[in-house]
Image 1 (cartoon, rainbow, N blue to C red):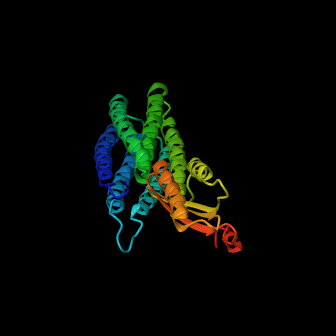
Image 2: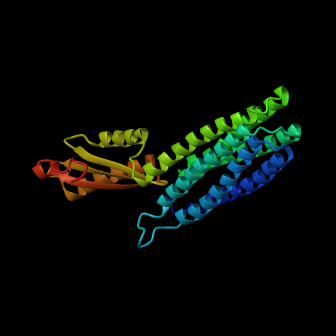
Image 3: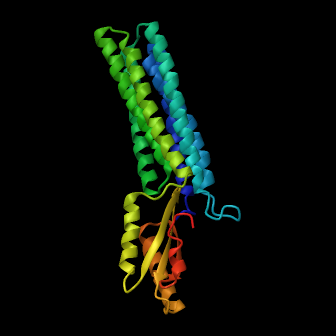
Length: 301
């Protein structure tokens, strides 16, 4: 249930712990090798730590139950976390790009390549495991914060992979310019990831509708109940963090009893909740014969 989401906080602590350990590993690899590629990797992990701390704070807020001022709960706070995460990714990409251009203009040899590669592989495997755990939990419990954090960590994994390719290539060929070039490629890849996360966050803050597959489920339920002269319109949906919302108007014959109409709405609401938990369902019943029942089809009545 939406009100019982405090258990998600433990995943944020996992992300914080992994970020701290990864920073130590990658910073050590950079100081040993003096590789700008490994430096870019360490910078990305620093952004991971900040993002993980923000996620921890936001998940704590989002887990609070509804109150008088927030009747629908606090789950929308998760969009702020993913927005911060996307912004941090953009900053990291810019920082990496600047460092790479500087090293490209002033190339320097890489030292102790073997040790640096081993340390980076360990850090990448750690991030990969944690990212999979966070993504699985985020998808299962509809937490955009955990999903964004998982994507950020996967960006870190791919960053490390690219850096290792560059450092390894330098070790084989002796072409020191490969190190900053790979770092620039990584910066571009991170930039794209950050833009995608920011776009999802903005969409949530703008009350974007439910995904097409979930709307199809709702329509299927409505169609199953709208027979024998019953119709519906003004179906509207939105999502706020993990919570879904939908509203719809049902037109029924005017001679129906209140109890019969109420039973229809209860059946529809129950089926929708069973199919798309958690979701808040708002239904409105109208007489089919009344012309005013058809004046509110538009999005804004």
